[in-house]
Image (cartoon, rainbow, N blue to C red; front, side):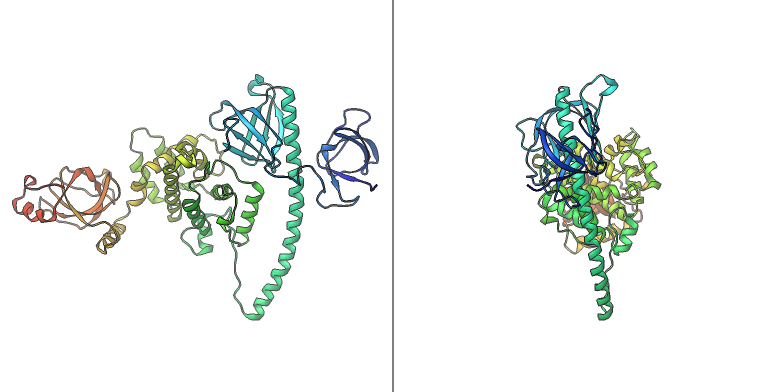
Length: 518
């Protein structure tokens, strides 16, 4: 019978005189099986003999092997295999209340459901690089509490009794340790592959020099400022953002619980490394599209500066704290002061929000979900906690963007209005209609993109963005004032549409009573 050797992946402090201490990385020579879950052997590091728990070690190919373990109980697994399931009480992330949920533990993650019979999880917790521990509840009034700490959040749980807590903590700890062990081996393999790639790339460069072929440059995509990224790519909007949001908007918007179920950390890290090394991701080839949605959030969070910019952030928060209803106008002014790339990203993300909400019966996403998920990613200052004092204002801003998208983004400058007019005359947009001003309207503070209209003026309507605001220019003033040919927006309910044939009759007779409105 061949001799077996094991490697310690989980430290252990002996509790009895016949047991031995284990440190991570120690090699153990197996001698005999003692009981179910306990073996007897020799620690080759300190030459001690004793009993040790089998869950803390993994089998090696031979005494000196540094390769991945042959048998660990979880590596050769079905990732969907349920190792343990049952009810736990979970503490909420935003509203700090405790709710009972049904949990399922697999070799790579821990998911929870609203009910035992539910098929779709509310969220899935990736256990790679996670830390598990026991703790007492708030003010020590709650017993049997424990936690899982991931890169993005600390999850708190309460078991029914001490035995249940021990079972969950034991299993989750074991999975986390083994995933960490596997991850370290994968990193070693990747480093070796990198070395090979560097050698190969060196040869390729030499070949390019010899054949006078142009060298392809690659730039980091994650953790780079928007200005620097656009400059490197010679683009107006980052290429990754454009391709990813287009994929999400066209193909993934109906995915149930999109953005609510987290992707796999190892896969996300691989994608991030690929993008930073110049490789392109084929989004449609990813079997688990939650990974693509999580990658999109991950990229937004890694932008070094809040999308509102550090310079304007305080002004945005000041406006959002107001309760007098003047938010929209002031916010529009600030949004127009953002760098073009920031404003474009905000526009496209808001468009995605609206599309998701229009299909919320399928994807199960609501405005609260969107504000909780995207608020920190888009607006939080990078040196602040995601649950900082401005979190409620970030939520409010997302709701305002959704409600006023046309007003914030479609109403442009005067030059954009002229361009819009040309587009209409070329027949690519709605037909021009004519309206008579029924009620005078003067914009607040004479905004550049809104028209001052007086009762009796005639307006050429060139675009109807929504039911509330239309775009056009004044073509006749009843008070005979000079017409400046300015294009702008005006409230649609202040104007009545008329037949163009009736305009001459109106000008000749000079009265609203002579007209028939559409």
